[in-house]
Length: 628
Image (cartoon, rainbow, N blue to C red; front, side, top):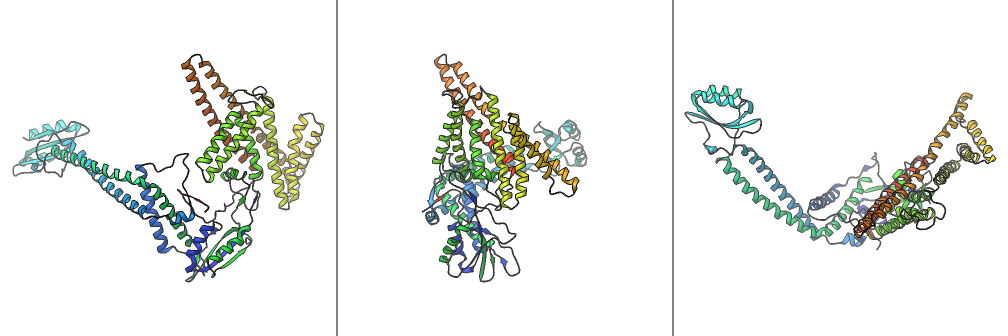
């Protein structure tokens, strides 16, 4: 339940040994790599041909899988666990057939791209010919002769009638092929000696000549294109069937994808090193308690290594690695969604977890729902085995279900009914007591945050700040409710706190006026604690909402149970209603429990902004690596 001490590591070795060292570091998963900055003596490493080949291989597999994803089931089901393999099994799995599948998939993708391009081209050509289907003449025959002018084109709709009349007056003919849209397609024929007058009439009508690159009639050409389109469609279906057939090898492709990803990660490591012509320098961070093992393991890989392990240099901030027990580890996800702690401050997880556990259960506060939540989350952990933050949040929900069961039994809530007597009291019957209890919990929560701030100040050897910024606030906050409850001692405690804030609030400012205004400002700052405490009324509101909504669904179902059909509908109402109530209130409880930590609690002592400790290791997407 603490932040790990870190050690700075420098590894100097021969360039020929680097591939072996990089594989060893990836296997050990102990060193957080810190990129080398380029300087006069060292050049920043370049991946070169090996990295280029690794990236190209990875990209080919990725492209093939993305293409095939449209032709079958590539995403695992919600409850389907990731396949597991040992490190040796994954790295040594045969890939010859998988590469053949990749080549076939990319070839099919290329062929489909050509087919689609041809289909698009033909669709465009059909659309161009469509307005001219009424033309019976062959397009190749529509050309000027020694005595006649023949043209295809379009005229503006509002000028079509005038254009026809003008051409007829010249002794010519206009055949309107389609009366649709703003521009009408037309066939024009006139005597050659009327060419100049015809040109004038065409300009007035907005005539635009059309060139159709065909020889036969438009209708014949469209039929040919449509037949060719059917052939292309059949070819496309055949290629898509081949792509769907390749999905049988998706498991092999997933293994190949992770193999190529691991290789790419390892080859990319060289770009974070410093190099000379013969040597490399790699720097990073290791957890202090693992430093000796790291040295031993690397020395086994090469005897030509110089390894230096030292405390963090002054002014350099290492990444932060937290160490918590099995039950607290899932709650690290809650903190990480806010911010990672700095290595110089405390890890707030252990202090936050009990409050999150308590608040989540209070806001759902139904024992029946708690049982369902716990069972559902545990089944998800057992069957799907989610990793990373998703796995942590699922574990938090499972523990939240236990808290919900406890608080449901305390308040007598079982699927919206009081099936068993409440251990303490029923919130719907005593809402004022419930509200007071929630605000009291808020006081405890805020006090814990203030005490955490005092502890950090004390550790930083600032005892005066710990007392002035924390003790006097606590005295005031707790003195006021004690006074309201009629405890005379509360008045003295409250006055002590107020006087302390007034006298010490401006201690960092210069001059009498600055110290006085600083003290008054500290007193005014107490008003923010009032709004913080009132925020805990959401525990009261959310807890009552769950019970009331559950009770409403029970009442509706009870009204429907007069006949067999009504009983069936009532069962549906109960199942759907309670599932909805559980889902929406569990989500709300999670969100609001997080909010109480982030705003009311962490704001009192937690700064955050640290860099997470991420050791260089195998990063896989589809295969989960298990210990051999």
